[in-house]
Length: 212
Image (cartoon, rainbow, N blue to C red; front, top):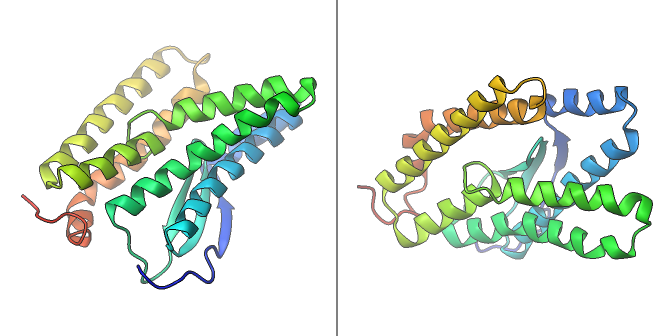
C-alpha cells in the first residue's frame, strides 16, 4: 500500500474471552494488578499500531487478546512480508520501552509492573503463531523461503506445540489455569488459520512469489 495513511485506527476493543480473566482478577481484589495488565496490553498494541502507521498500513480495528492483540486491516489495505515483520516487532519494542521506564516508577508499582512486562514480552516472543514471535518467524519465512509447504509446516509445528502445552497445563490444573485458558485460546486461533490456510496463501500471492 503506497498511499499515505490518514486514519489509522477506527476502534480498539477487548475480546470477549479476555473479559472473564479480567473480571476474575477484580473479584479477587487485584484491581490495581488488573489495571496494569490492561494498560500493558494497550501499550503493547499501540506499538503495533505505531509500526503500522510507519509503514503506511491502514488499520480498521485492534482487538485486545489475553496474550496481546490482533490487528484487522482496513478494506483495500495490503501487507508484504517486510511490513508484516515491522508491525510484528512494534509490540515487543513498546513492551521493552515499558521495561526501561520502571526504574523511574514508584517501587510499590514498579516490581509488579516489571513482572507483567517481562511475562508479556517472553510469551509474545515465543515463535508460535499467532504470537508476535510466530508472526516474526512467518514474515521471515515469506521473505526468504516463500513456499506454501513451509508456511503449512510452520502452522503444523505451532499446532502441535500449543496442543502439548494445553495438555500439560490441563494435567496440572488448577495451578495452571491461566496457561490452560491461554493455550486453548491460541489453539483455537491456530486451528482457524489451518482451516483457511489455502485461502490465505491464495490471497497473499503478491507476497509469496511462487506457491509450490
